[in-house]
Each structure stands twice: as structure tokens, then as C-alpha cells.
Amino acid sequence: MRTLLVIVFAVVCADPLFAQGRVSGEGGGGEDRGVLGPVNALGQDIRRPAPPTGPPPRLPDGTIDLGDGLWIGGGPGDMESGLPKGESLPLLPWAKALMEERAKRPNDDPYYWCLPMGVPRVTPYPWRFVQNYTIKPTHMFILHEAIIHTYRQIFMDGRTHPAELDPSWFGHSIGAWEKDTLVVDTVGYNDKFWFDRKGTPHTTQLHTIERWTRINRGTLVNAITIDDPGAYSRPFTATFNARLAPPGDELMENFCQENNQFGIAGGHTHPFARPDQEKK
Amino acid sequence: MLKRYVSSFAWAMLVPAVVLAQQAHPDLSGAWSYAIDRAPAALKKTVNGVVTIQKIDQSARHGDATAVPGARPSTPAPSYKPEHQAKVKHLFDNESKLDPVFYCGKPGVPRIGPPRKIVQLPAETIFFYEDISGDPYRIVPTDGRPHRVNANPSHYGDSVGRWEGQVFVVDARNFVDDTWIGEDGYFHSAELRVTERLWKVGDNMVWQATVEDPVVLAAPWVMPPRLVRPSTESLEESPKCVETDGAKLLNDDHHLQR
Image 1 (cartoon, chains in turn green, brown):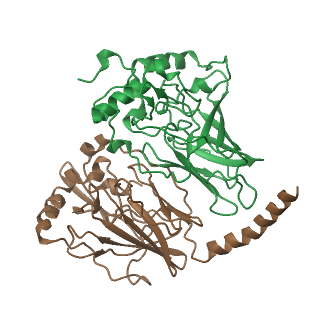
Image 2 (cartoon, each protein chain N blue to C red; image 1 turned 120 degrees about the vertical axis):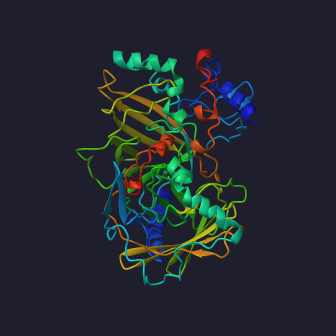
Image 3 (tube, chains in turn orange, brown; image 1 turned 60 degrees about the vertical axis):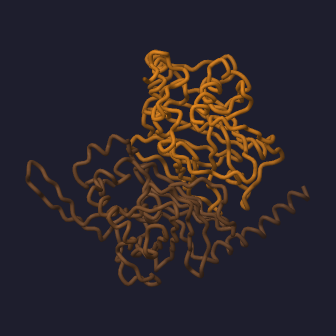
């Protein structure tokens, strides 16, 4: 069974199929329609109803309610796919070279070592906001089902970023509402995580501005601006869509470390790995 | 326009109702002092054969756990069935090699202790923790739903919560069996069931857990209560444990890394 799952995983992630049936921001490696039909990273059938339409719900004070369900997607499986058509990533030469080097060593993706995916990489696992715990929230949280079942903290009390921050996987986030858009400003990242499976890099100078807009009940748009003069010649904005999961879906406990059948711990290499990289 | 007006009016009526509903019970929301399981009162270091012992003042980390109002009679250690006591001793004697948390394992419940932050919502309460195994969280539904029937066993179990007067009671079950319920080799089976009680004493919060495991324990273990002080420190992302850390352990300094 384990072998079957691995084979299915490899098949659905194989590069030629990656371009098929992908919705920007809703993929990330596991949700694409492969030759075996719509399956996720576990080889399980995906039979999702269409996301609901209609106006987004609001909290009693009129704020858009982002916490009424689970979201799927909203981050890059491929950062470049979120750019406007015809644009490419403004990588500095060293960053481009690093990305090319990473392409040769895809097993180095921290994701495959069960480390946090950082920001904005969330796919393909569900996540949710925790928002409405007071009438005037001082914090918001983002709960991730995977890959280490952890959370992000967003300060909503008007504070600014501290002058000195220890670099971390999720950085230091402050948020505010601009009309119906939640704007999350984050600095203080480490440079360990990859933006996507292609190894799109960043440095500790990374500054992200996420603009989350629930354009209807079932769709949440994340327009994220990447400002990292250490790795890019100019800031750029990529856009990804998250889809509301069906009612009743709940976050499960998912610790990659404990059941990592796909990554290095499972004795398997990345589907893009060269034959000579195959673990013996 | 009329629809919008009616909607706004409905919300305006609902706001006080929500506030009242939230105030019907004590509000446990907020940040609470970090309280690792039984942190040592002293650090023992051996360097080039020279042993030094540094006493640690725990008073700021742990409140006085004696005579806590509302606490149930407790014992410092669980009582294992005779046939399992040898295993406990073996695990205890070899703790530095066998304790799963030394290898980035999850402390699980109740070993992770009281939450570092609580977010109390009308239909659910969320516990946030700081732990090098990955800063976990737990979602505790309080809307009267039963335990999930098809959930996989997990490190932090399947929890439901309810209020018994002024006490928030969390019933957690459906655990995997590879965590310990405390240091000193306190293993458990998959039949583990943990009941946590949380209540306020003044500005402080008390957390007390009762552990039941009919497979290995001779009787339920009522753990000593923890009196947890409110904290003004925000949650902070923990450094991530990696599995190679275990081999680097020289002493128990890691207990007070945070």
C-alpha cells in the first residue's frame, strides 16, 4: 500500500502533468489531475463540490469573517505561476544561480525534511483563520494542518515590528483591515524555507505584504507582495486563490515527521531527482 | 437598502448577545506563563570531571501548587499495574536514550502542560503551545458535539470541552501510544484518556489533569495542579528541533532553554 501511495504521488507530481488542470494557488504538488484521475498527494480521490458563491459572511461589527471554515490553497506551488501573464521573477543573478542549483538537489527542500513551509507556501494542505475571538481582535492566528501542525500569529493591535527580531520561519506579522481586505505585513524571516517546490529563494531581508480579500463566500484571494532586495531586483506581487472547503471539514493533526512516506525519511527521493540521486 | 438596514439591526442586537454569552463563563483568553513539565530546580553540569550545581529559581515560572482553591487531591506520580512497573523503571533508568522528546517527539497530553495562550470563542476554545517539537495547537469544540468517531489517533488526541460551573473541562482521548505522560518513563497505552480542568483563581489560572489508562495504570492519576500566572509575553516561534539533537545531549540544560 505504501508503495502504491508513493507511486501515485510520483505520478501526480511528474512534471509533464503538472501543467494539467492546475488552478493557480490551489495546487502546490498534490491536487492536480493526474492520469489516475483527481487525486491528492495521498492518492485519495478528490471529490470536491464547487466552492459556494454569494457574499462573504461578516462578523457582528461588519468585519469580513475569514474564520468560518477551512481554506485550501492561497499560496504558491510555483511562485512564478502567480505573476501576471508574461512576467517572470526578477531574480538577482546569484538568486537565479541558487535556484538552478536547487533544481539539481530538490531533496534539499526543507519541506521534504518536515520543516515549516514558511510564507506564503501553504498548499496543498488545509488551513484556517482564528479571528473572531473578541469583538475587536488583538490577534489573529492562522492554523496549519500540516506539515508540523503549527500556527502563525498576527498582531492586530496596532503595534509595529520590533527593531530586532530573531529570524524565524513565519516571521513577525502585523495586520490591519483596509476596507474588506486583510493586510498582513511580515518581516523577520529566516532564509531557510523555499517559496515553492522549484526552490524559489529569498533572504532574511524578505518583507511580505499579504492582501487577503474574500471576493465571495467561497474564494479568498491572496495578493502577496514580495520585497526582498537581497534576492530580487524589484518588489513583485503574485496572486493565489484559496477555496473554501466543504462544511464539516476539520483540521486534522498532521506531523510530517511521524508519517513521512514521501520525503527523505520515507527512503524516497523527489520525483524530479536525477537517477543518480536515488537513495540506495 | 432595507435589507441592509435590517441586517445591521440584527447584528446590533446580536453583539450584546455574543458578549453576554462569552461572559457567562470565566474568560480564560490570554497569554499564560510558560510552564514546562516539572522543570528542574537545579542544573547539574559536569565539565572535565568537575561537577557544578546551579540552583534555579522556579518561583516565577511556577506558582505555588499547594493548597490551590478548587484543586483535587493529587499524587506526584502515577500508579502503574505491577506487570508494567519494570518497564517504567527501564524507561526511567534509560530516559536520556529513550525519552521521545529528546528525539523531537511530541510531548503530547498532558505532558505539554497548560497552554501558553488561550483563545476562547463562542463554540470552540483554542489552546496554543510553545514547544520545540513544533509549536502545536489544539482545537477544543465547546458546542456540545461528541468526540469524532473516525478520527485517527494522534499525539494531542481528540478533545471536546464543556463548562462545569466556573471550571473549563476538556476531555481528550484517541491518542497514539508513543508519547509519555510525564518524565521518568511514564508511558501509556492507546487507551489513554485525559481530563483537563482549567479555572481562574484571581488573576491566575489553574490547570489540573487527570490521567486514565485502564491498560497500564492501577488507578487514575490526578496530577498536581499548576498555578499559571498571566503573561505579557507574546507567543514566540520556537527553534525547531531536529532529530540529530538527541545525540548532542550532555545534560538536562535543555529543560530551561526557553
